[in-house]
Image 1 (cartoon, rainbow, N blue to C red):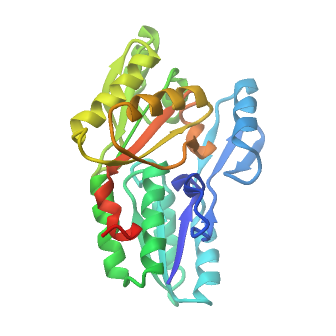
Image 2 (image 1 turned 90 degrees about the horizontal axis):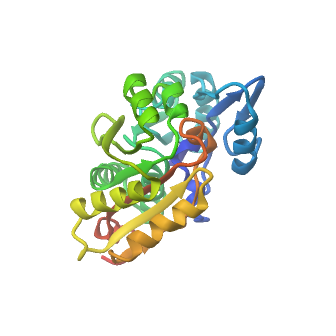
Length: 290
């Protein structure tokens, strides 16, 4: 079986050489320039260009034709393909993948909606790769992905809202009001719909980070070990602050902190800090602990 994902699952953050799989890039238009995610510009340089730009960015998913092309190539090696993608509630990538799969009847393609994005979505890709290496059948891998999706929570906060408002990812009226009041929202991802949910708000960025930690405490007892990964767009200091706050309370199985896809960052701006977390025990059968 071949496994494929898109750049918004942020598998590069895992720094795992086993995840040597095709990654189809999303794209971001900034003025007259089109950047392929993870290929044409570094995240730091992208945010420099974003700050200088007189226009706000526009992102786009791979086309059905692009998916069909890579599916045909993979099918020549193995007709069974598992295609794992960021939430359909936040991007058209999943639907493009489904349309592309319909164009390649010679392949047996299963398209997965992770119902999330970035680190938490990357964990599902990682699980599929690890499961395949362990000799798991497709049905067992699919069941594990559902278990991980159910157990994993994604949260983030940010300092400015203009990018989220422009991208249509939150209500314009609520976003505008929060911007005027200088409120920092706590945003999650709905586990069934895969879209953004407002989980709270704070007056300052540090209190917003505290709010994220409070949500983790309400979700998983602090006595239980958690698998956790802190991410950011262009805010390493904020990411370190969040990591320190989490580390002071929980027993953590840490994954590398790092910068997320700049296609995702185009919708949040450079100040975003986020976290994905779940009970560590959910992953024991993939890590050799069970």
